[in-house]
Image (cartoon, rainbow, N blue to C red; front, side):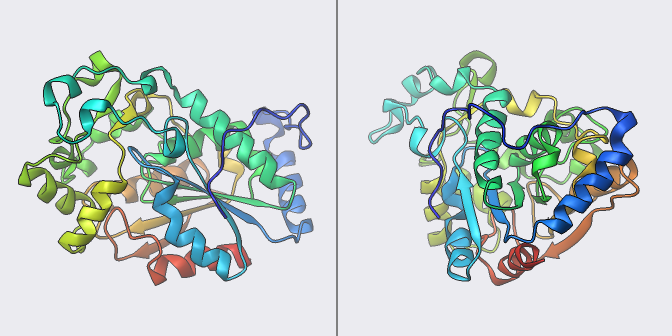
Amino acid sequence: MADVAPTAPLTADPYPPVQQTKERTSMTTNHEAEARDADRRPPTLVFIHGTNSSSAWASGLTGELTLRGHRCVAVDLPGHGREAFYPRSYQAPQDLEALATEPSPLSKITIDDYVERVVNVVRRARRHGPVILVGMSQGGVTLSRVGNAIPHLLERVVYVAAYCCVDLPNVAAYLETQENRDSLLPQVTAAMVADPAVLGVSRLNWRSADPAVFQGVKNALAADFTDEEVSRLLNMLEPDETAGIPLAEARGEAHTWGRIPRTYVRLTLDRLIPPALQDRFIKEADRLTPDNPTDVRSVAAPHVGPFDRPELMEIFAELASR
């Protein structure tokens, strides 16, 4: 299925939220489990992309899953995909001085806008059956926030080498942890051409002529890719990402998000979000929700997959067939 265009909020919620209080957690959890068992319609897999990206990251995955008979859709978050902003100075020939200062409409976008977009998609998909919501990388922030907002509409949440904040409030806090010490993120941010605090966006020049940028992206994101595959990756990435997402409150809450069955797909060759940090996310989540442990899978792949590799395809096909 194709990516999703922006939609107006529904006039009425066909699946009204339950009372989100800790006192009702046990009763609600049992009710939701019974509802999941009762709805035997095939689920829809909804995919959320990561930073400086779009629904295009999942095109190979959604295409193959659709051909196998599964319902799936990849969402473009606000300011991405068909709404992406490409500064005039980003085009060839590049004007690097202007690129550092040209304003971006993404500076006004917040995590609440991301959540609203995904919630609207989930509500529409839920009319046709259960929904499995999947987040990649920084898409885990939106995934957790949506889980907090509408746990009653989600069959399962799936993190693919994604930030899954529990003990610490946001992505920025986890970047300072011991488990993140081996991250090669600085090799990617070497492509940054503007001050996020001034411009309101993280602007990366994926078209840089500096060979160190090309090699840094390969090292951190795509270690087993050929140079030609890395070039294709660079042309899929978008220059601007709203700067507020890594600082946004992103913790999953036990009495909402913690009720939803959860899968974490570890990418063991990931050099951006190291396996040690992925494992910390899993341990923290399991400590928060001991009665709802994480279903853990491991795939020998770097941070960007590619996500249509057979091992990942089989995981999603299995989850969609349960």
